[in-house]
Every structure is written in structure tokens, then in C-alpha cells.
Length: 148
Image (tube, rainbow, N blue to C red; front, side, top):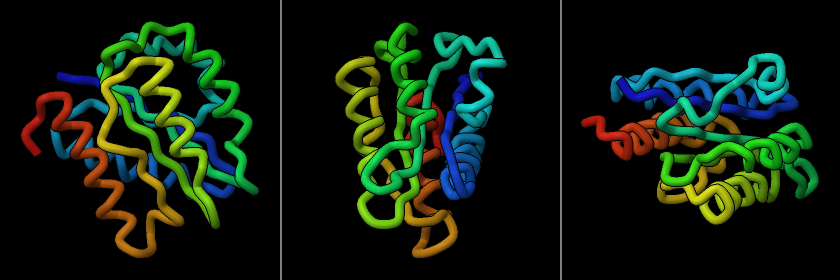
């Protein structure tokens, strides 16, 4: 069974909700999923390389990425994630730069096999957000070989 980890940063739990719903989409494909707050990663002795897929998400506040995810991206650069399946997502109010910055880092620096693009939602619960987040999870599951 393929394994995926979803790591998110959040202030108001919007990005957490998106992460959990993306996880549902992955589980529809039979993928084993771990969802984790970036604040808990250091305590967990996490081995990113043991996962088949890594998804990272952070909100955008005043055009900036959440500092916890910014720091985590520097730490994740030490792991060998080249060729692993990846996805990036984030919640936003106005501009949504974080998801794109995470996506670009994963694609160009980590050299990961990324989903078609980053998922940017104002909320998981408005404007079809639940369906979009589940579909994003299913897209990642298909990249891992699942038939969803």
C-alpha cells in the first residue's frame, strides 16, 4: 500500500480542513494517509523519505507564507524527495501566493513529481471547496497508481 503524508501550517484551521479533505481523496484510492501540523513535525522524528507522496500546505497572510512552513521547506531540502509524488495547497483571503511558492519549491528544488498545479482555496467549505480538495487527493492517488 502506498503511503502519503500531508503536512500543513495553519492559523485559523482553514488549511487544516483542506489538508484533511485532501486526505479523504487519497483514502478513496486506498492510500494510507498521515495528516500532521508542521508544528508537530520536529517532535515526531519524521522520515519524509519513507513516504511515497508528500503534500505541503500553508495559508497566505498579507502576501506571506506561514513562517512554520517556510522553515520546514528549508529542513525538507535535506531529505531526498527527488521523484516522489508531491502536491501543494493553501488557504487564502486575497492573494494566495503560498501554495504556488510551495509548489515551485517542491518541483524545482526538491525535483518532485508534482500534481498538475497547486490547490488554492479560500475555504474548504465554500464554492465547491470540498469537491476540489477531494479531487486533488484523488489526483495524487492516481499518480501513485490507484484507480479512483
